[in-house]
Amino acid sequence: MRVLVVEDTHDVGEGVVACLEGLGHAVDWARDGADGDAMLSEASYEMMVLDLTLPRMDGITILKRMRARQDVTPVLILTARSAVDDRVDVLDSGADDYLVKPFDFRELQARVRSLMRRNSGGRSNQLTCGDLVFDRATRIVRVGGEPVSLTRRELSLLEILLTRQTLFFSKSQLLDQLFGYGSEPNENAIEVLIARLRRKLGHASIEIHTYRGVGYRISAT
Image (tube, rainbow, N blue to C red):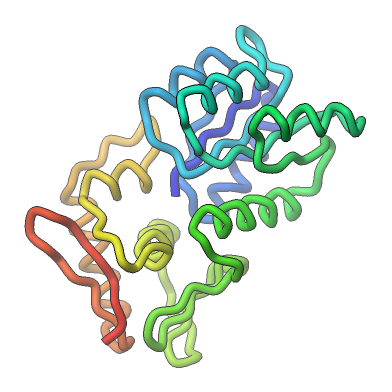
């Protein structure tokens, strides 16, 4: 999944990015509000982690502009403001959740997983297909109860396919979700990742289908 972090404090931003990349997400990091607002119009994100106090454009303005253009991307607010009125204002402005600074990165990960589940219509951390089980909390994939070793990017690709098993994902959609700014992959990278997944999950009761000109979809066999 591709996540946008908008945070101007270097130490906090660096920690948040590392935390999200540890969950297997592709992460873009904007250091001020104007850059974050511009990046939202240039790319598609599955979630945004947004600080409120930012140079050039504050977080509430970014949030209101998003919702005004019908952008429903889930937004997790990072704020030092702990008063009830401040939290109510944030939620009423269109935020999906908030986290008060300072925070434990384990809680950040849990909040992100929760919003991802909510956005995909699920309530469990476990994604299943056939005898394959993907635990989003531990980032462990099991087939028939036995763990399978996958790279971070292979895990991310599998998670995308499992989250919406009825949908087809084109190569361009997968590239957009798996790689952030600064990466220069091409569609061959997706073909390589799909081939690796098929090889490593060849003993599972699942199939990753290729539909020429449409994309990829996973299903149980």
